[in-house]
Amino acid sequence: MDSNLPVPLPEHGSCFVCGTENPKGMGLTWYRTHHTAGGTLIFADFQFTLSEQGPPGYTHGGASAAVLDEAMGAVVWLAGMPVVLANMNLNYSLPVPLGVTLRVEAWLERVEGKKAYGHSHILLPDGRKAIDAQGLYVQAPELFQQAFYS
Image 1 (cartoon, rainbow, N blue to C red):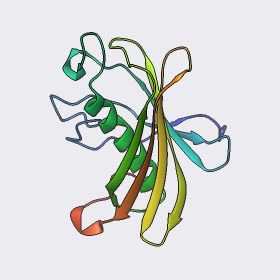
Image 2 (cartoon, rainbow, N blue to C red; image 1 turned 45 degrees about the horizontal axis):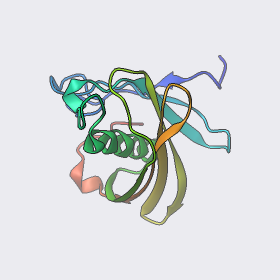
Image 3 (cartoon, helix red, strand yellow; image 1 turned 135 degrees about the vertical axis):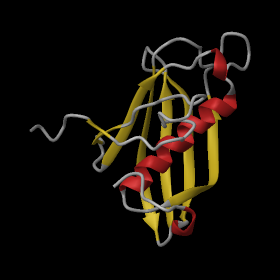
């Protein structure tokens, strides 16, 4: 089997971004592959819908932030750290239209003790970066009864 082929990650129940049991969820499917700089990259191809609208025809900033947070959190979980978001910085460069196929990518930048730093972005269909995010995640195993990504 080719180790460069994307591998789907398990979804987790009622998660707003990637759970199949949430009737109001977005239903993203994450895939794992290798980052060009080494390490793991996760990604999902998806579309925002009217449910995530902010300005007419465009995505609400909070909906895109939720996707970026979930992507970074998932890649940190893959590294074996049950975490929650402590801080996220976002740079909105371009508006994100509804109803087009987008790609979100995330990777782990570094781990420092119980802290993990992730990076993610949302790419438009033409490959331009619409939103860039950096996140600080802290371990919080007491909040989780099971590991979603293992």
